[in-house]
Length: 363
Ligand SMILES: Nc1ncnc2c1ncn2[C@@H]1O[C@H](COP(=O)(O)OP(=O)(O)O)[C@@H](O)[C@H]1O
Ligand SMILES: [Mg+2]
Image (cartoon, rainbow, N blue to C red; front, side, top):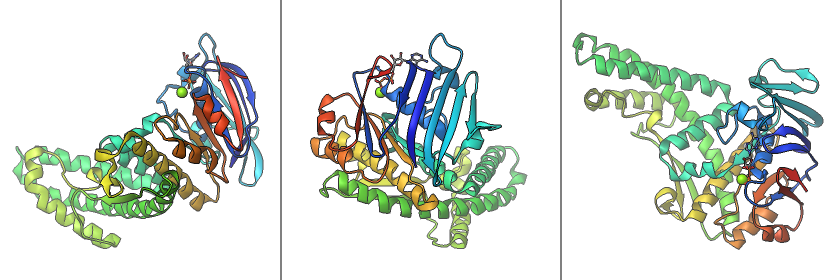
């Protein structure tokens, strides 16, 4: 997958721009607040996902204008294709000349992964961020996972309501069996998928991390259960989950919440055998987050046969010159867009294209 041409009209501070990237590394450089991240964001929006900045649709329209118009020529699924995106109050996509009835319909057409400083939360923050990453990544590859997740969340909410009700209605105690059976069913589905995904992801991410760190450091990613089911197969996990839920009843009745299950599980990320969250340096944490994101792209390629475009926003800061050089010159075979402020990076770029952004213009 690669972008062949991008055309923007009235998108944020970019009044009008046309840009033909190269197939390798495209380095978008310039001072702060010139529109570098805006340019990456515009490419990302063609995935059909919401902005990685958490922006509302209307915030993307240039101040004072009514509408933003974006056009992306890309090569994917073996041919040249085009997507148009117009943003007014809402987003509207047109694919190869045909209007799509909803933004969800564009999903899966143009594939990209994005790393931005907000993704450092993957390493630095609590387990919620890592579960969100896992759930989103797997749902994208396997729509059945999203259904199981929704079934799980509903059953979990019912158990939690019941735990609170039991204080006043002890006669309902046996109903716990019903919800726990459902939770165990969906939990086994979610966990088997998560473990399988992490297995694939870690193969790629550890290799990428090895490259970034010049083989001086190792990255390890494992699934960490809030309570051990002790199971390997789906049926074993399901049985283990039933037992865990039953054993947790006493404490769960006190708190009115469920203390075991995939909604409490985590992704343990270690660098040189130490928790990256607790002990990693800024540069190590950034490298680990980047390795996860590039690993995610590699998993997508192994599933779909298409290599997603990589969008890397402000990835270079806090990295030493070896790591910067690796990112600039050794991520081969795919199209990458990197933003940076430091003109020295342009000097260090061996192949690829440097694009300067100034005041919303590509110069
Ligand atoms: N909807 C908008 N219309 C016009 N300008 C905008 C809009 N949204 C953001 N901007 C401007 O874009 C600039 C930030 O661009 P950004 O791409 O984040 O900069 P950087 O080059 O540092 O990555 C800010 O000056 C901001 O005011
Ligand atoms: Mg920026």
